[in-house]
Amino acid sequence: MKTPKAESTADLHSVLVENLGLAIAEGTLAAHSILRLDELEAQQKVSRSVVREATRVLCSMGMLESRRRLGTVVQPEESWNLYDPQVIRWRLASSKRLEQLQALNELRGAIEPQAARLAAGRVSLDAGSDLVSQAARLWAAGHSGNQDEFLRLDIEFHASVLRASGNPMFTQLHNLVREVLTGRAQHGLMPNLPHHEALQLHVDVASAIQRGEAETAHAAMSRIVEQSTEEAADIWSEHHATRQPSPDPHVAPNTAS
Image (cartoon, rainbow, N blue to C red):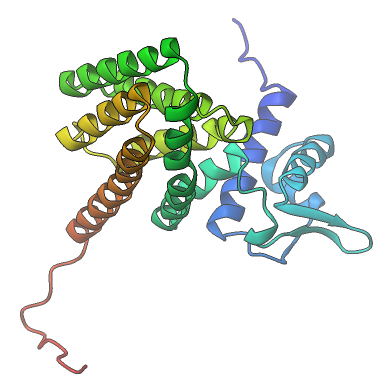
C-alpha cells in the first residue's frame, strides 16, 4: 500500500506566503506587530527554512520588514507594493474588497481612457482591425453567457488597448487590469450576463480607435470603467442587504437623528 506523498517544501512555502499575505491584507496581522519566526514554525508545522523564505518574499512586497534586534515587523499598507499582482489579489480577498476595487478602478480611470486616446492616434491599421474583431468576439461571448470566455476576452481586449497606446509604461499595467477583472468575477461583483451598454461600449472604443477618433475613444473607455465601479457597488450593496437581519417587530425603531 502506497503512503501519501508528503507536501513539497515549495508547496509549504506557497501556502505559508498565501496565509500570511491574506492575514496582513485583512488586518488580522496588524501593522507594526512583530512576527515570531519560532512561533510561526510551530503554528504552521513547517521548517525554519520555509518560514524564512516565506517572510523573505513578503519583505520583497513591502508587507514585512526584518529589523535588527527587533525581528520581522508587519508593515502598514502604504509600505506595500500595491501593484504586485499577489498583493492585489489579497486586498481583493479581504473584507475591504469594495474599497480596494474602487481604488483600482480610479487608477484604471486615469490610465485606460488616456491609453484609448493615444491608441486612436498611433494604432496601425492591422491592430485597429484586430481590436474591432476582439470587441465582436467579446460581444458574442457576453450574449452567449459564457462567463469564462467573456472574462478571457475582456482581459485580452483591455491589454490590447493598453498595448495599442504605444506607451510601454501603460502596456505593463495589463497585469493590474487583469487582476481587477479576474477579482470582480471571482468575488461575484459582476452581473451574470454583461449589460448591453457595457458590450456596446467596448465596440465603441474599438471602432473609435480604428477610425482615429481620440476623444470618442477616451469617452467610451471612461464610461466602461465608471460602469464597472457602479456595477460592483450595486451588487455589493444588494448582497449585504440580503444578509442583514430583519428588524424585530417588538422593538421600537430609534428615530433619534
